[in-house]
Image (cartoon, rainbow, N blue to C red; front, side, top):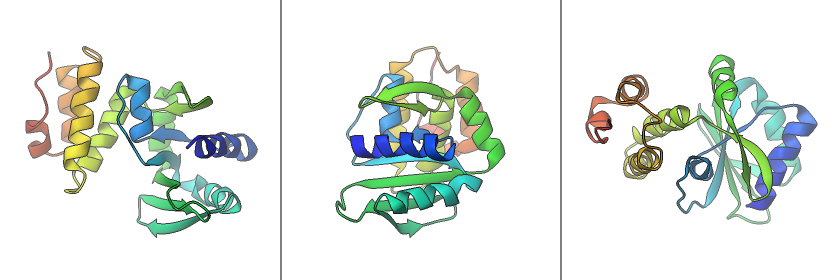
Length: 174
């Protein structure tokens, strides 16, 4: 995966695009890790075109597209998968402002603030095939970062990005 991290860093420098590492790799920045087979990043919707051009130039092809994300796979290594989540400029600006520097596999990137990462996980957990994994990640993040997210903040995140059913499955934090 080092190649993918290097590519993201190069694209940011070359094109002046801001990218945020999300998903399984971003968990490490918040003191929790689990195995993951892909790399996920977040960008502003208006940067999707230039980012896609650079990914294609580097040998990636888009194999799945939905309104909020695109999935890329390298032509020579189909196990090298990069998911790109796209959000509006205002949302990205808020997340970028609060993001934190993180060195992953020797490459300097940015990761979401803990509350933003939890919000992303809540949003993803609404998809039935992701619920258990993402709720597990939230549980682990809260355990690994005691006191960093208040009960009130978690309730607000659940109200805004999750569902009542998901909120009921989260721990009661103090």
